Length: 380
Ligand SMILES: Cc1cc2nc3c(=O)[nH]c(=O)nc-3n(C[C@H](O)[C@H](O)[C@H](O)COP(=O)(O)OP(=O)(O)OC[C@H]3O[C@@H](n4cnc5c(N)ncnc54)[C@H](O)[C@@H]3O)c2cc1C
Image 1 (tube, rainbow, N blue to C red):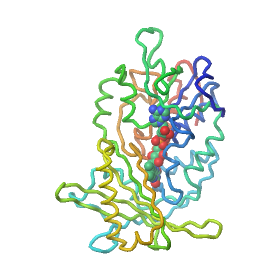
Image 2 (cartoon, rainbow, N blue to C red; image 1 turned 45 degrees about the horizontal axis):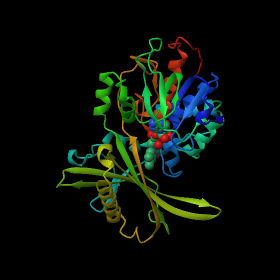
Image 3 (cartoon, protein in one colour; image 1 turned 60 degrees about the vertical axis):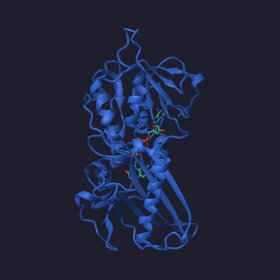
Image 4 (tube, protein in one colour; image 1 turned 90 degrees about the vertical axis):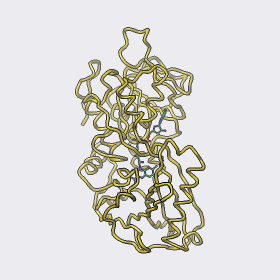
């Protein structure tokens, strides 16, 4: 891997991968082993995207066929060494002052982001000894292309005046410099794609309408660092809250854990909830939701905040949400043959981290099928 600055661009790249989260990093790494001129661009300092926000103790991958194949892929392709023993997940819900096994919601208590929550309620999950940030480091070691950090793509360009070019003709970095490539692989949140393409109305109306209707969720996570153990269980916990006045249901997912570093034990819990991206920029609404989450936590664990030394709040816009898009088999937009979509949010197979790995696999499989006339690669 070599880090580049915008002044280093020499001509055209074969592949420009936008977004160095798990999916973009996987795609760029495999392509860089086949092609000489691959560039991976991210607005942040380091690759990994949301994976860096996953507390090593508080993430889960449900046990199912898709997740197993995603983990096998990381192990085979990048030697990530992820073990895959399975444990019971046993989600519990706090109801009438007691923790009970979760069996389902009544219609009124079902939150609008029900599908997002379901991912975390699978009956079994993998007991993972390494964490996603470590997988990202391992994958990045195999990357042979160029990495351009701290650069936000502000526009995707299609020059009408250039009849020789089909599809996208460039991307604008930080509102200024233009970068050109034969192929562009977009791996950021799907909601943002329309904004990036909007100046020149590049996306076909069918895709634009779908993205406009797409529900994208901002996650709010609250990590509490405790002085002492509070709850002796690492099951997924659910606090459900229904506001009659607003006819609004919310669910707060939580998990307690402990970590031993240099012989010292520390105890903490992480809580997460979701809010529509459209309203999450309103700090009053977000603040109210955090207060509501804390009230529910206190109801279930009345002394928890007295035993809390520190808390950390993380707001991650567009971290969750799913959209079905009709793409070509190779994961390009039919009208834009050199724009590939690698975003986890459109994976037809899975969501979240499993979705990013599965979508990356689909893009790589698609590109190996010689759908692209100019390049041949064999991956997988
Ligand atoms: C608090 C929290 C807890 C979670 N817990 C779990 C869990 O337990 N299990 C699980 O499976 N998943 C979990 N997830 C979700 C999981 O982290 C994501 O689904 C997964 O990491 C998505 O990877 P990605 O590569 O598709 O996208 P991202 O990680 O979002 O990567 C996209 C990258 O694109 C970059 N980018 C975006 N737009 C631009 C642009 N215009 N220009 C340049 N760069 C751009 C971003 O900086 C980012 O690095 C959690 C997420 C959060 C926030």
